[in-house]
Length: 110
Ligand SMILES: [Zn+2]
Image (cartoon, rainbow, N blue to C red; front, side, top):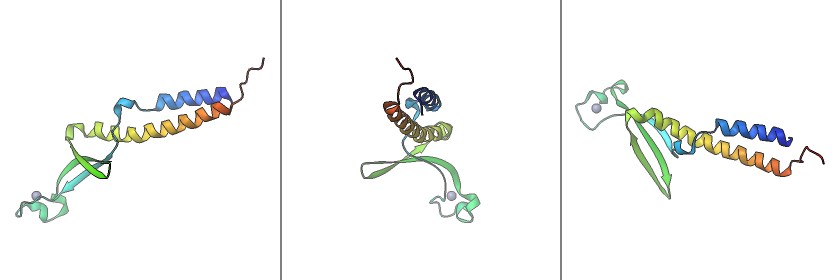
C-alpha cells in the first residue's frame, strides 16, 4: 500500500475507534436466577426466575471478580465492554498500518 492510502486508512480507523475513557475490560452478562426462598414460585418453572440482572466479570491476577451492574447503567456497561474489544482491534490495526508506513516508500521524488 502507498503511504497516502495507509494514512487515509489510519484516519478511518482512528475515527471509528471508541474513546479510551469509555472502556471496561470484562465480560458483560445478563442473568436470571432462582432465589433461596423455599416457597417462591421461581422454583416451579424457569419463566418465574428472578431478573434479569446484569453483571460484569473480569480477571485480575489469578482471581475472577464479578460486579453487579445497576439496571440504569446496563446500556453503558455493555457498550464499555464492547468498546474494550473494539479499541484493542483498533490498536492492532493502527500498529499494522504504522509498520507498513515504516516500510512504505515516499511517493514524492526529488
Ligand atoms: Zn424466587
